[in-house]
Structure formats: C-alpha cells, structure tokens
Length: 132
Figure 1 (cartoon, rainbow, N blue to C red):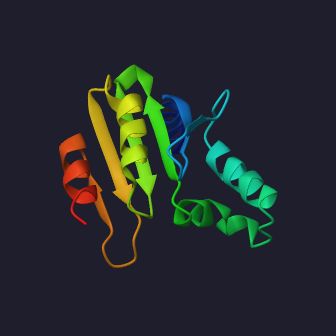
Figure 2 (spheres, helix red, strand yellow):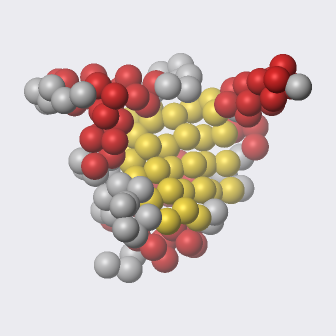
C-alpha cells in the first residue's frame, strides 16, 4: 500500500517541468532545470543577497511576503499553479498571463492569515486581485 502511494505522489510531482517566480517588479524569473524544492533554495539565496539573515526555514514565506509570486507549470497536464501573499501589481498580472495564456487550467492560492483564498480559474484569480 505504501509503495503505491509513494509511486502516485512521485508521479504527481514529476509533472511540474517548469517553475519560478514573478518578482515584485513584474519580471519573470524561471528556475533552470526546475525540480521540486527549488523555490525554497531560490528564495533563500535571493534574500541572502539582500542581506536577510532570518531563519532559512522561513525564507520561502518571507520571499512571498515581499510581493513575489511562486509559479509552476505542469506541462503534460497543461496546468499552471501560483501562490502569493501580497496582491499582485498590474505588471505581475500581465507576466502571469504570459505564462498562463496557453494552459488549460489555472490554480491559485492567496496566502493571507485572514483573507486567504484558493481558486481554480483565471477568472476567479482576476476577480480576487482586481477588487482592491
């Protein structure tokens, strides 16, 4: 039973072939040869370049809290998944659209302690981020 579950989880995670961030200034940053876990490493290295010396285990959340958006493209399934903690700017929305426009599905998670939300369409995402 455990082997089957492990096999299913491994197969699910290997579908994510591209990943990166849309930075707070709207630039798209793709992580070369993306593998699961690279978002954490990228966030820590970027923050350390800025002089941040916090707990390395909190680097990912700190990077999101600074207005950066994590993205993943699941190419075989034509899906995009994003996570953010700060409402995106117009330039970030345009960058996300460039990445997502050819994908069949779009999922998002807004990580906010009181107003957090998950959704499964580009329309839901736009409804959330454009109401300010």
